Amino acid sequence: MNFEGTYVAMVTPFNKDEEIDEEGFRSNINFLIDNGVTGLVGAGTTGESATLTHDEHRKVIEILVDEVDGRVETIAGAGSNSTVEALDLVKFSYDAGADASLVITPYYNKPQQHALIDHYQIISDAVDIPIIAYNVPSRTGTDIAVDTVVELAKIDNVEAIKEASGSVDKVSDIYSALSKEGLEDDFNILSGEDSLTLPIMAVGGTGVISASANIDSKRMVLMVDSILNDDYARACELHYEMLDIIRALFIESNPVPVKTAMNLMGLPAGPFRRPLTNMKDDTLEVLKKALKDSNLI
Image (cartoon, rainbow, N blue to C red):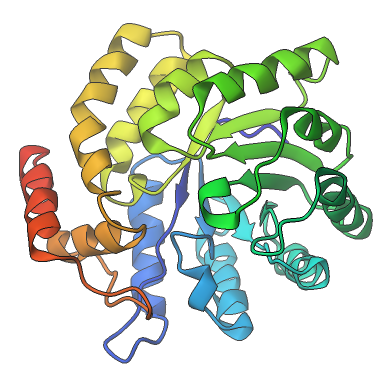
């Protein structure tokens, strides 16, 4: 599977009782599809997967696949710090009809690099579904090394990486290492840092899994498509147009600002699951200003 374009790391909207807002989630799915996104990711970090029960996690995936109904690609968040639990979620994603699974590196227990390879190999051997490895060391405590990425690219079903280490240099090293093995055309690098999408794609990335696209999907799609069409002048304009709002959306822990922005815009989002809570007054004002300056409210 070729992962190329704009994928949205969707929020999980809750109602006032902090239950999944199914109607709101379906509405957001259609809003994003109408804005031209390539695919949608459910039950990932931006979807507050850490505080979803396993039943809720499965429900999000089921709703996503059902509402999309083949119109765009569906990617199911399916990671865990337990290989057994991750495998169970990937199996469920496959059975539910998702097009791919996003599998974060096991968090907290800090597996060795060879253990990471084993983790993804075990999952790949058990389920025939495309897998996107997710590297976000700021949240997990583990950074996938460049050599390890190359080994993951050799595993049959591991077809891409969402790279959120915050280093364009590392993406360059990954692409160079893949190229030396002749793997660069068979393994995609997706930006996991919205503000770095332009430079990441300039050095070999093929798209983004974006949190900010929940509210600014049209411009993110335009920027990514411009890069894919080698129109870097237009892409650069869009990058700088979006930069302030992207920064404001990460001024506090994701997904607090993006859900706050959605609530301000009248999009279904609702409250947060504890321990996340409302934004501070000063950062909220920064977010409101960025939304106004971007003509989003």
